[in-house]
Amino acid sequence: KQQMDLRLVFVFTLVCMMDARIPEEPAVPNQMVTTESTVTASTQVTPDPQYPPQNGPCFYAAPEMCLSPQIDEQKYQIPNCECRLHPAIPQSLICCNVTNLTNITSCQEPDPTEHWKNIHVRNASLDELDISNGFWKLFESISITDGTLKRITREFTKFSATKCFNVSNNTINEIQPRVFKNLMQLQVLDISYNNLSTIPNINKLTNLTIDIRGNKDMLCKSVSETIDRGGLELNFVEPDKTYCLTNQTFNWFNSTDSVPLRQLYRMKQLQSECPQDCKCEVERMNYEQQNDEDGVPLLIFSAKVDCSNRHLTELPQKLPTNTYSLNVSCNNITSLSALNDNPTYQQIIRLYADHNQISSLLDLEGTTFIEEFEVLSLRKNKLKSIPIYLLSNTLDKNPRGKMLYFEGNKLHCDCNSAKILRLWLLARQNHIKDWDQILCENMPQIVVDLSEMKLCQSQHDWTDYIYYLIAAEIFLLGALVFKVSYDYWVFKTAGYLPWPASKMPKLPCDWLCES
Image (tube, rainbow, N blue to C red; front, side, top):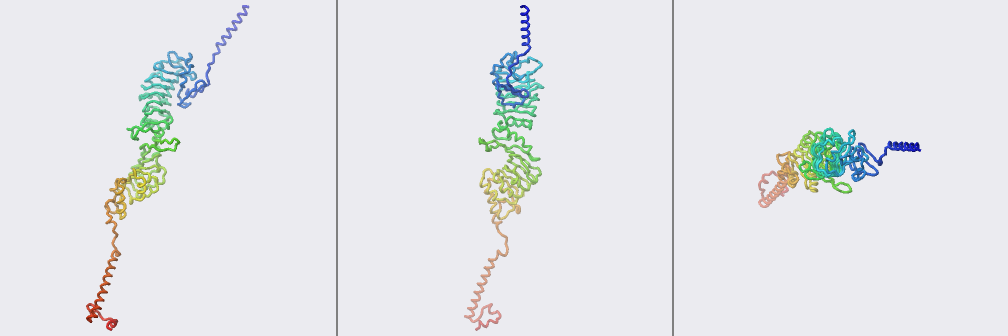
């Protein structure tokens, strides 16, 4: 019996040893882990990531995880640390409702050989974040969201490994300029839904995605400067739904409208569409009614192109999109036909073509420009005439805001110039500001000083005296009839003929009178 008891003890001990060697498999929920621990999804906790996309470098912990009793289990706790290990993503921390930054930076890895890679701090009641602490250096993803953070100070230490920095949904109004100086691996910067007015300086702008949505005071000048530094390799999240404020001291604008980031980005692409050797820049913003279902006017930029002093012999072949103003002054252009047959000129409403060789305005007949223009400046060209009928139609239909300039053109002046053109210029002084500076080619006079009495007299020829000849003939004929009648009366009463009839030689027919 004693041997039987020993055998039972041996078997029981062996079974216990086998159970001890077989580790208990943790109940890991069904999950999906993206590249570099970006997003987690499980049957128990369903994340609702807003940004970045699933294959991005950012680590995201859903808000529900702060309420889940799972993270309070002993195996997820870290000694002397308010943060917890993520139950599914290795080397990742979740920190909820932190009130003191030291409670985070004092956390230490249980295994010094394995560094934490990701951290997400939620609902932190912090006013200031000093990012220079070496604690943050090795994290590839740092998220501090949905808290009361107001300022980020100092700068990341050198050789920081951070690829994603997310401080969205706080009340940040200041990020010191040097904060991101040493982040050479940064791929995603999320500063959305804060109170920022400028984008902080970033050294590494290639292949960088920035989210600035929800910053209602974000200035377009700062965004524009960031785009200048980053070029086409800089990406913004939802540029059609992200807006910046126009600054009154910024020379593009004269108001404080909200500009869609997409439009701002297109402004920076103007140079790629700009004609060679010309200068293109944004002139102003215009609200244009779109065909969308909501019918909300869209703020569209208008570009101006300056091709003056470029030795051009014709108008540029192509203009950038939304070009409303074109300056081609001081060239050798002879024709304005591009305004008629070039589709990129359809939006032009201001044309400055002073000091060229343009001799006719007839190319503008039937164009959109002649109906919609605001400024047509053709000072010191080669115009010989001004088509009054062409300009009168558009000035009568829509006279408001239209300006014409013809100073220094030498027209061919004649009677019509004195009778019609002179009066037309005097009547259009509000539209033609230099009405008194238009010259005559064939006489040293200004058009408005022409005299109708002098110019409208025809040249003299023999036909001008025909009436005098007829009158003289009638007078002579009457005198002849009177003299003949008088001579006949004297002859009958006195019996002789007065002079000169008495001195005239007799004719063969005189016998008729004697009988």
